Image 1 (cartoon, rainbow, N blue to C red):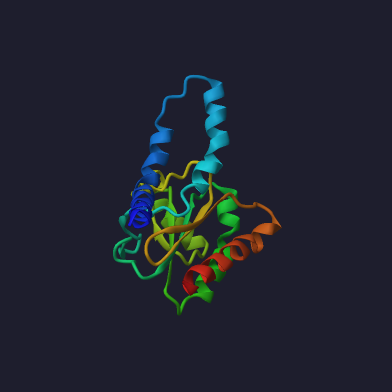
Image 2 (image 1 turned 90 degrees about the horizontal axis):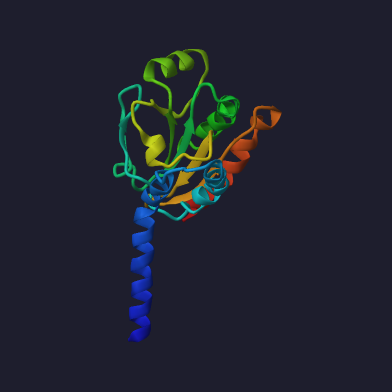
Length: 198
């Protein structure tokens, strides 16, 4: 009986952690910086903090795309979510778009939803999309999901969320050279396949 109680407590504590770790990430960021050493220490910790979000419940979101489609974490339960965080002036964000589009094409008949959360205003994103194809469902900077998702290490950031709303993969950064032609595809495809098999 004692063994069962210990296991149950562990499960409950893990569940509590998974529900609050994005908030803990944000709390870390709001701590005051008193010196250059504090700034450097925070930057050094950023990647570790981001990787600690794997296994956490994704932040709830309720947004509209620039075409007016409503998207929420709750409504997307049962589907894999591939999220991209980007902005127009970010060279690696732009160079990886063809590789991201290839993923959308490959998984178009499966239970996978691709969402791009941009930092830019809707008008700027719309102008960008009139000149360059980006096949993800597009959400503008009107919604402050960059803070909700604790994007602290830089852009682009790519994330895979499983059918239960749990973050299974996060990768920050990209390439502004020829490696961008396939890097995002090669990185995300095995992660998506693994989550779909669960």
